[in-house]
Amino acid sequence: MKTIRIFLLVLILVGIALLCTQNIWLPKLVNYFVPTQKTPVENYFGNEATGDLNGDGLPDTAFIFTEDGGGSGTFFYVAVHLKTANGYKDTNAVFLGDRISPQTTEIKNGELIVNYADRRPTDPMTTAPSVGVSKYLKVFGTTLSVSS
Image (cartoon, rainbow, N blue to C red; front, top):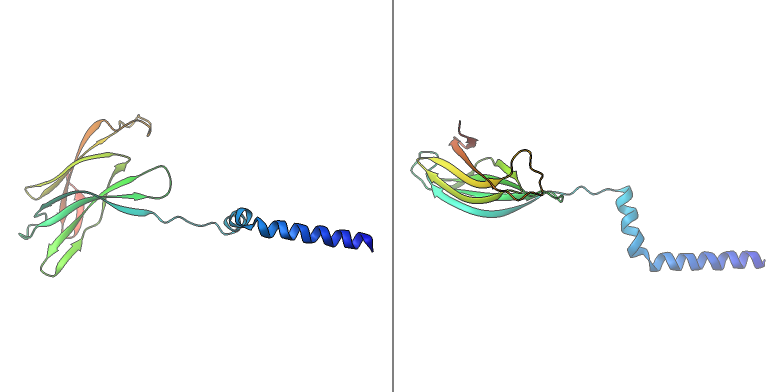
């Protein structure tokens, strides 16, 4: 009879200890059995440029945004809001690079020019961007594409 009482007392103490520390071990246990998938977060970066990109005479707006998926990278994209009589239509986004350093964005003669600093292909991602890059893009319909 004494052994049963000791066993029940130990069981109660373990239960109280688990209850008091559940904020520490329960989230880890849940994440182990039900892993969560991180959704990329998009953030407006800026570097807006305004001008006619599709030849309709209306001012379109190009801009840069970033996507952060929770890892070490920050992925930069450029997209365009095409002005229409009824508001705006968005183009697709074009990837610029990972952890680049945007400089200027401009529209000249119906072409979008994005200037930024990047790394050499042989540089590690820890190297600061130092190589100047200009990406030239055009809009065809509602599709933004790199110019050839």
